[in-house]
Image (cartoon, rainbow, N blue to C red):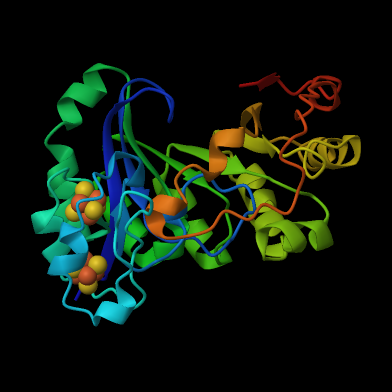
Length: 299
Ligand code: SF4
Ligand code: SF4
């Protein structure tokens, strides 16, 4: 039987996730834990309760409806917000009673066949507008078997991926066979710093980058500019050097860190704890790429 995938969002009419107008599918779960991640819904692989706390009316109905022991359910008052209880079973009782409609479960499970059928309803429109489908996350390659099957079912359409390339060589090879465009992050060139700030060594990422360069597949490299971490001269120069034999590289995009990155953590019952100076303005140094004849811009 086909593996099921877990998806936390499907965005239609997307215009920044590849060429033309696209439908972007957000895969739940990521094996990295980047200190600057702005999307906590995409971090964990399991379905989870999300609450848009800023719109809470403090009515307390969620706590009253929750079947968990009272000790596990912090009450909402005028002064406090309803926290997500430890041991939440995703039963949905609180969602049904919330008068503001601000509680939801993130993570819908599909077979590749079901998801492809849903996406292909708009295929003609997307094709007529120079677009197609983009898989993003979280890290889509972390649900590799499901993703490869989904991409096969979307053949005949433009298929792009936003990925860290932190996946096995075998999965990456399969993905390169299917995709029309790869948008790959390279965050930090130094392996020790990469581990410190993302939780993982980057050797598999750099090896997949070599495979990507040799494949002839069109690709874009994206570098998040994290102040004092990835925006340094040493890091950007090292990344540019990695791209020197550039294959079908179209361009490099530098993405400055935004202070709002931590805004959604409370909604997922998580705490935002960046281990770098969020007060600094990131350096948008394009020169290391431009001097190697690699098109580069700061987004
Ligand atoms: S979804 Fe979680 S928080 Fe809501 S009622 Fe069920 S157990 Fe309680
Ligand atoms: S039911 Fe909704 S509005 Fe009322 S306290 Fe809970 S989250 Fe807030």
